[in-house]
Length: 110
Image (cartoon, rainbow, N blue to C red; front, side, top):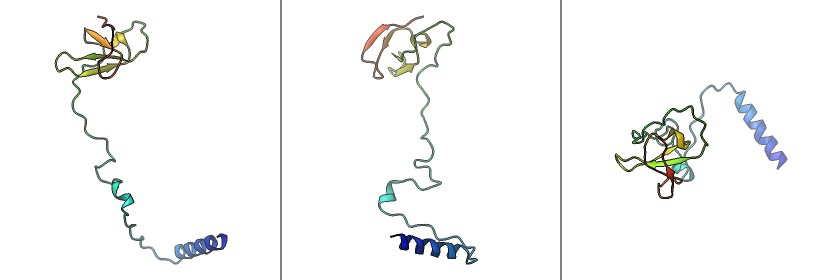
């Protein structure tokens, strides 16, 4: 095994020193690689475009508030909106403790 690695290294080193300045051809993609995005393609290398958020931005507050994820339904379209704490929720109404807005907790603060 060590002899084979030594021989492979020698061949690579001699190939690098041969003065050949052309780049090697790109490696062929295998079926295992087929699911991987191609470099430079938009499939997976860039984040997907996000639809405009139906949730209003968090309310600015200087009040001390527990950092507890708080969810509330947007009355305009029923979207379940997430906020970092109950004090920053800009929508009045029922607050929820889960991201599906199905587990009620205390009412929203104003």
